[in-house]
Image (cartoon, rainbow over all chains, first blue to last red; front, top):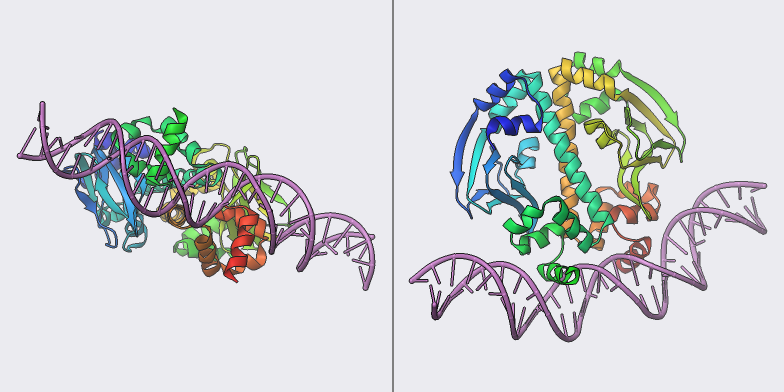
Length: 186
Length: 186
DNA sequence: GAAAAAAATTAACAAATGATAAAAAATGAA
DNA sequence: TTCATTTTTTATCATTTGTTAATTTTTTTC
């Protein structure tokens, strides 16, 4: 998905504002397994995924995957982006990826100069917020197998592209539990 | 907490922009038990809490409380605010409340006219997003008693002001489980 | 302050999920 | 293709959380 389409998909932008954003973006590619972004560091870029698949995870005793990003989505360390503080997430590429890179510093400048871009940034955060809130509520309402069925319904392609251990952790259960659930459904 | 302080607390605003917002706000009061906002309706206002305490819950077989709002916080049906669609949450007043009311429509106009207000709205969404993301991760990492201890540490006053059934549901467990956890801790 | 109502706790048992280990299946490298 | 490695499944047992019902405590109302 090319940058123009990605930007518009987040929220419609006047041509001039879109160009201002595009002028600050460079293309960049990494291969599967690359760690794009390390936990506990302030990250100074954000990325848009042109092609490929990544995951965000937090590490303690075990790794907990809490987000998958695919074509058209935005890779961002929220803590860095919002509060200029080290983030908790590590981003790992699950496939070879082509990305667009944008310096947070430049984006901030544009936020202050251009009301359309400021509102575009607002819309981005708002939409992410709704997605996160819905996941939180789903977690509170549904048991593991309901959450699995929901994921299968909403993002069936993830199951083809991501190994089950990461899916299990995303659902908040162990891989063994997920295997059990899959066996029961068949 | 008065409106000027609430607005600044979300994100600093130039005096003129702050006044523009304040001019669109009216004061309003309701008593404990009042339902401020009904699920499955498009809500056309947002509210800032001057004084009091509210909860947001979703209803299926049971009620699931997923948010508490107190002095200085913002009451908002995200689905209405962001997508103009009926929200999933009902807002109930847990104490007598004094609120500031702001029409979403007027706020949208200000977003388009004033870059400072647009960025203020962006910051609001971004900060809410971080809070929600942290809760989601906490839910994925921690068991019920760890989440209870975390809540006691971060928001001890809630335990004084909110009945335990609502706390339990916020933590994603039954009231009976919460009682058991409290008994174990002592 | 007594009675009624609501909220919180406790107990006993059921169900869901976790932990560990072993086996089977799938994937990748030589 | 074959061997080694990684991923997934299965089985067993432990732990956590849920369900229901009874009891105690707290709050509200008259």
